[in-house]
Image 1 (cartoon, rainbow, N blue to C red):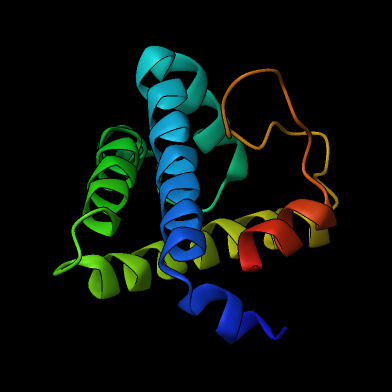
Image 2 (image 1 turned 180 degrees about the horizontal axis):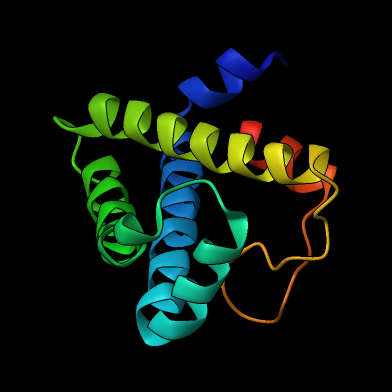
Length: 127
């Protein structure tokens, strides 16, 4: 069975959408529950001016929540999924940039236990 046919099944489609929404909600929860840890992880990436760190650290988890909720609303799903793709592309690019810089030792900022940057994270976020 091809992937398109599999995703045409409403149960499979709902499970995939629900799982992705849970991933986003979980990521947002980690960032909101440990804001200083997320701010530190974001700063370690060195991809934006220092003045933007605090506002971006506040907006990212709210964006993850909005996109996760949007995916659960059929009328908003397509736009939310485009937003998720854009967000994951930004995450993958920031990780890849730091790997190219030789900075694999920093925490990804994904939440939970420290997780150093790796090319597998770039692949995961790209998929």
